[in-house]
Amino acid sequence: DQQVKQNSPSLSVQEGRISILNCDYTNSMFDYFLWYKKYPAEGPTFLISISSIKDKNEDGRFTVFLNKSAKHLSLHIVPSQPGDSAVYFCAASAFNRGSTLGRLYFGRGTQLTVWP
Amino acid sequence: DVKVTQSSRYLVKRTGEKVFLECVQDMDHENMFWYRQDPGLGLRLIYFSYDVKMKEKGDIPEGYSVSREKKERFSLILESASTNQTSMYLCATGGQGETQYFGPGTRLLVL
Image (cartoon, rainbow over the protein chains, first blue to last red):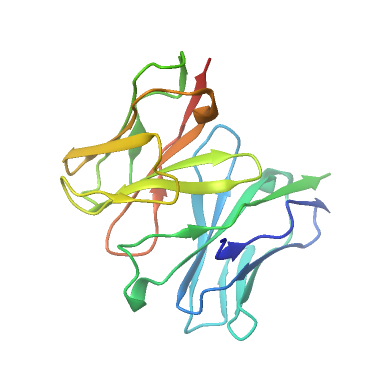
């Protein structure tokens, strides 16, 4: 049973506009959330994270929002650029609540395509 | 910078062969992980290790085993490769924090 869900397998956005990638989770023990970006034939790279004590974290063009009551988080990319075209994975952990040794639970990913 | 290296980028093997995939990290991290990535299925955890000679099953351990004889090295072994093990294999490492760092991946084709 998937504990982290990314319900949109793909998203297409025009360059310069906002990209919003969504993620839902079911386990209320999760207290840390991460986004990874993956290009074809490469390993995922860490993008941004957020702790459950916050509801927003920003890093340049990337902002992650967390809504704990809805068990929902989103990644906003503004403005979107063609180089942002990649698969984005949402991940969660219960690190501060006795999780199994730093294990992350991943969603299935969303393919973002940014067109000129 | 964390560096995670994997022994091969591309590998072609025949059904029934024993396959070794090796991962090496240079950051003295305790935790190491093996995932496979398949289209539409995301990253699925095969095995992980939190210390030398320790291992834990992930979500899909069947058909795989692992070895961790040294802290920096974590090997994934396909005892008898099958065509359904054709996939992208990703190694990751993590310290006491939550963030995991991934290697470049090995694309394995089993014929």
